[in-house]
Length: 129
Image (cartoon, rainbow, N blue to C red; front, top):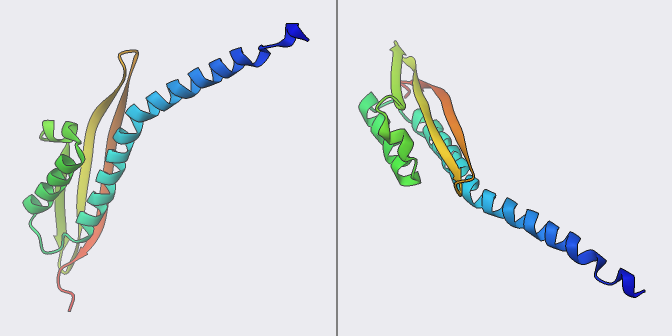
């Protein structure tokens, strides 16, 4: 019986090591993915309410939200965030384009580049009574 004593310790240590590595990687990656998701959701909301706002105001609101979420890569390039409005009569569309890259640095061991290339288009109606 004494030859079997401590058999499970090595497996437990390896499991804890793997769990720790996954937790450390998640601590780096989750805030980046969460920030991107929140910015896309905010753009969807901003585009929905863009009927009476000029294009510059819509673009400024998106940049303010990106700054609030810490997506500084979207603010560094002037073409990373674009807002356009096309109207024909009483209806039209508001399109917000997000095109930027964020680098996730996993403690100097590995770097992953997360590319965001998203186009949000919402209908806008000018004269609804």
